[in-house]
Image 1 (cartoon, helix red, strand yellow):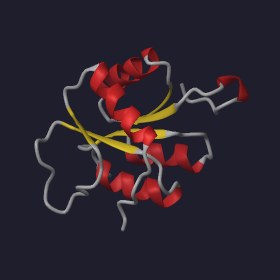
Image 2 (cartoon, one colour):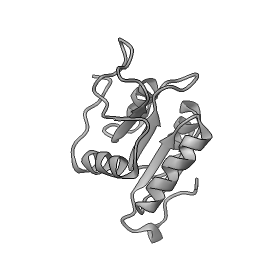
Image 3 (tube, rainbow, N blue to C red):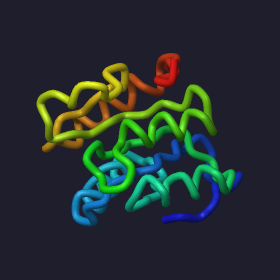
Image 4 (cartoon, one colour):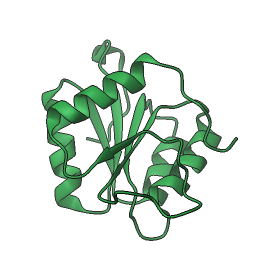
Length: 134
């Protein structure tokens, strides 16, 4: 799953999935692949940053919020410092994020279905993204 984008991939969207729970990451990856997307997976914010720093093509990021070391909102700020404007979808099981967490990130509540994920990604890929750091 972690190979660089090639010219043979055509218009396929590359999604970076960041989740510390292997079962959720695998389920999300399966849903995205069923939708025709190419998936890169990372099991922490730090691992996801390594992928972004490597220069691999990433069109959109789907990240869990509650992760040890670096939560999804913190990761989003760092990711956008490297790749300004990249679409980021925050997945969370929390009804409300703690005070101080970025409220500007689009969210998808867990558990979610494939159609919910597809709709959110379509919205993200269709429109311009703001920078959570501003």
